[in-house]
Length: 150
Image 1: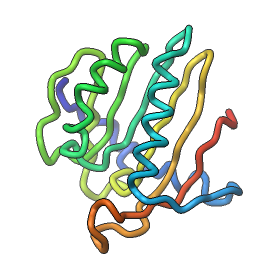
Image 2: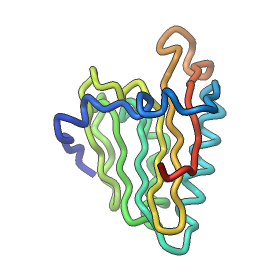
Image 3: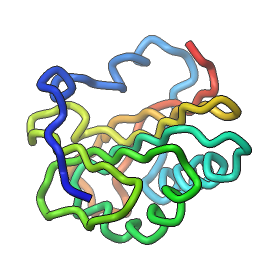
Image 4: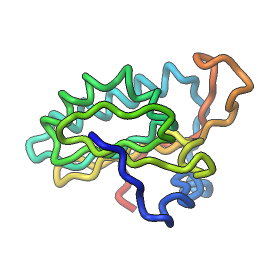
């Protein structure tokens, strides 16, 4: 998997800004975000008609511990796209496209997992509200998890 540069407009996109007025925001620590993400990803891979998976890792180095898991998931999906700052080279994995984001991109401060498929569609959209202020396991994210197609 080679990191590709996305269109310039994507570097300015914030998924979290799209849902700031949406009701039902939650605040979660990183461990809970990992558990939610894994549940969504596994559900996407089990659908009868696979869809597309889009996941924000903030930095490609954060993808490395998930790489083998994602290789398994990608085999069951139509396609998988990961987003992050290219602080390390992403591993070459079939079915996974890495989109390199500039450091100043709002998406680099967001955690998202979006699935778009005929049988299953959902989105976990959140923003890091602590950044480097807390140790990594204690970082907190504000966001929503929705299956609302709008």
